[in-house]
Length: 350
Ligand SMILES: Nc1nc2c(ncn2[C@@H]2O[C@H](COP(=O)(O)OP(=O)(O)OP(=O)(O)O)[C@@H](O)[C@H]2O)c(=O)[nH]1
Ligand SMILES: [Mg+2]
Image (cartoon, rainbow, N blue to C red; front, side):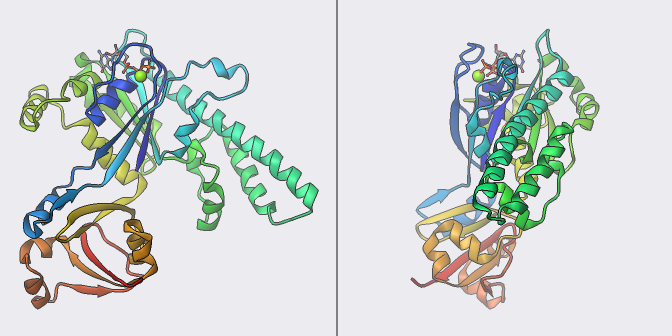
């Protein structure tokens, strides 16, 4: 999963990035530099199954964070967007909003940032409508006509200054549009980066700003980035103590992961064996066949069946013999919909 961090200059993007990735990049240097990090998604379940199956190695699902340079608004006059094109490759976006500095104007900044994303999609949609129209005219080929209709629909919605995530499409149309990688089609997480002295009012702030988001597609979080960054490098027990003292409900990174999984409709299934115990991330509704393909295309190609044990049974019964005796190992075919926490062994033949 890829999460892109965006926001205006000096809003605390790198601070939040450091907190999330446990890195120590320079902050407050106006460098506008791009940072990238891959973190492991902490999953107690992988550790627990590893205690039983004692593999050589434990691997967790991974998340990539991208800290993209802030935009200045300079590109706006030219009708161009200065949003970093790499952000289009992200699965979800984290919108960091300054609510700590003396000049903070969070309402304005949220609106502004969303407008910037809408503008960026407008440029993209215009260019593609133009290209498609020309192509259809030249070749007389009507197959692109439906796609053109969809693009026009998107354009009309963007013209009303609304993000594309509000539109519902059929699965087929969704596929046609996916390639355009519209920014406003991505779920996002607004992070209000508050100063230390606002910490006690975090719950009130959360409520006050909740009208900015579309539940299920967008989320809002109130975080003090500076404090979260200061936790980098501390032992886990020290971190918890620190958070408790300050009355903060948890680590920013854990909340980012949980919220992005929810927004993207993701779940984890587990595999274990002598070489490795591991958690894999998939979309809810993924079939056993496609889940096999996430591990390796050969397993998908040569798929025979999936041997599925639910996590709780695995932990309770421990040995393959006991699991089988209790009838808790299910043989599932290609179309089985994988559930969160399924421990799966894929049988395949290539
Ligand atoms: N008091 C306070 N200061 C913060 C907080 N978050 C960031 N800052 C300060 O704001 C300044 C900018 O932080 P950065 O994380 O570098 O901001 P940025 O958005 O990455 O900046 P650019 O990459 O230059 O656009 C630094 O001096 C930070 O220490 C916060 O939660 N509280
Ligand atoms: Mg930065």
